[in-house]
Image (cartoon, rainbow, N blue to C red; front, top):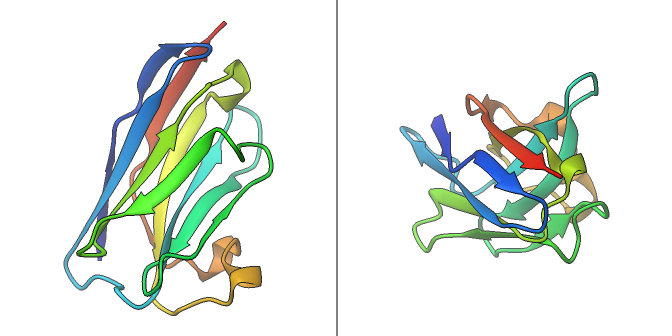
Length: 126
């Protein structure tokens, strides 16, 4: 599977952006897709993920209430709607896909995601 992320850019604090991640090739329709991010000088961290079979989602506490993850009906594209952006949200955002259906408690495990997109930069100015 190949993942193509898009939608990053520069936005002022309080603004919104929508990231998209399109999967092609042998897609993992029975697994999950998610978003991780890596800020300068920090480790990559989980942001949000959705289980493709039933749409169950998990969202990191740091973005809960501001970010929403969704998928299309074909289960090949996931979106990350980011509202009320803060300078701390500045990072490279990576989409990822895993082949197997995770239990919810394991959906954040980065090691289980076999496919990764190229990353899209989100910069939030104060």
